[in-house]
Length: 586
Image (cartoon, rainbow, N blue to C red):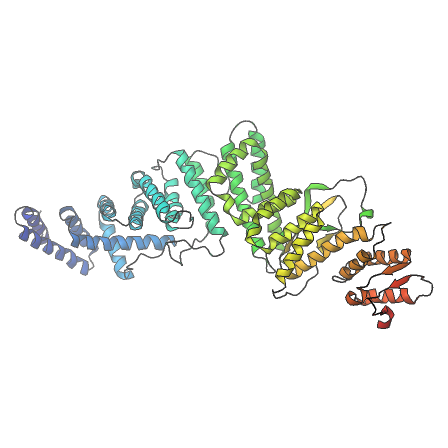
C-alpha cells in the first residue's frame, strides 16, 4: 500500500531521531501540521490516525501533550457534566471545540486512549488533578478498575487526611464515595478485601449523613455550586452494592417503606437469635435507624413555628382524682405533635417510633451492641447533633428522666433554648420542681429580648388520657410556647399542694389564681376548687390580689363572695396601710 506524504514524513522523523536532531524536529513539526490540518478540516478519524502515530513516535514532546491535555480536559468536563456533581474543570473549553476534541479521542483505539490518560496522570504532580484523571480512566474503561481502583482510593484517602483532616465534607471524600465506590462496587474487577470494603462503606455513610444533616452543606474544594441531587438514594444504593461485594445480606433496603423494613429486620433478628449474622443485621438496623433519624431531624428542624422539642405533657385533674391501683406505664407513652401539617406529624411519629425500636434492639442485645458501637465509632455518629437530640428524646420517651437530665446537662454549653425547655420538663417529672423553675426562669429572662410571636392555645399540652398512660408531646420551641409551658408547669405543681385538703396556704392559693388567668378558661376547674377551699376556710388573705388579678370572671366571683351577706368569709387584700377592697372595682 502506498504511503501518504504525512506517513512518509513521520517515517523520516523516526529515522532521524537519533542522527539528526534538527531534521527530526522539523519532521515533528510537519507531522503536527498534518494533524492540525485534518483537525481544522473537522476530519475526526484522519486527525485521530495522525494523533496515534504522533503518540507512538513523539510521546515525550510538550507540543503533543499540550494537545492531549486539552482532550483530557474535555473528557473530564463531559464526565463531570454527566454526573452533575463536580464543578467544571478550570480552563473550561468552548463547548463546540471540546465536543470535537472528544470525537477525535473516541476515534483512537481504546488501548491508545487508556495509555494516553495513564501517561498524562503520571505526568501530573497535583494530587487532585491526578485523582481526577484516574477517575476518568476507570469511568471510561471498566476493565481498568482492577488495575487502578485500589491505588486511586489510597491516594484519595491519603490526600484527604493531609488536606482536610477532621472535615468530612471535602472533595476527596466526595470523589471516593460518590464517584469511585459506585463504579467499583458494581465491577467484577474490584479486588479490595472485604474489611476494606466495609470501611469504605462506613466512610460513605458518614459523608452522606453529614451532608444531609447540614443546613447548608458545603463540600470543601468542590466549589459553592457543587451539590448532590438525591443523597439518601445514593447512600442506599452504595449500601446495597457494597453488601453484594462482601457477600453480606444488605440488599433489602430500597423499595420498602420503613414500617415493612422494620418488620422484616425484626423477623430476621428473631430467626438469627444465637446463630450469628450479627454484622449484617447490625448494618441493616443501623441504616434503618439513620434513615429514620434523618427524617425525624428534617421534621423537627423545619417546623414553621420553631424547632420541635419533646416534653412530658401534664395529666389533667388533681392528685385526688387519679385512679388507685394502676401504675404509670413508662415504656409506651402516647406521642403527639403540635404541627399544622398532618403529613409531617405522621412522618415524625413513624420515624421517631421506628428509630426508637431500632436503637433499643441494637442496645439490648450484646452481639448487636458490640457491632453497633464499632460501626458508630468509625462513622463518628456521636458528633452528629441530631443524634444527640434523639438520645435526649429516647431517654425522655422511656421515662429515664435521670439519664435525660444527665445527657441534656452535657449539652447545655451549646445554649439552645430547646435543651433548657426539655431539661425543665425532666426536672419536673423527677419531682425536682425547684430546679425546673430555675431552668425555666433563666430561659424566660433570655427570651425577654426576643420579639414575641402570636400566642396559640395548645389544649393537648395537658391530656385527658387515663391516669396510667403517659403522654409526651413535640412542641415548637418559641417564646409563647415556653411561656405557656412554664405557666402550665407552675399550675400543675402548685395545685397539688394549694388545693390539698388539710393544708391552708393562702399565698399558694393566690399564686395559683394568678397563673390560672394566663390560659383562661382552660383551667377554670382549678379556680372553682380554689374558691370552694376559700369558702370552706371562711377566710382568705392575699395582698397581691389587687395587683395581679385582672380576669373579670375571677373578680366577679370574689365580688359576689365579699358582698354576699351569707358567705361569712373574711377577705383581706390589705397592702400595708393602703387598704383597697375588691368590690370597689365594680
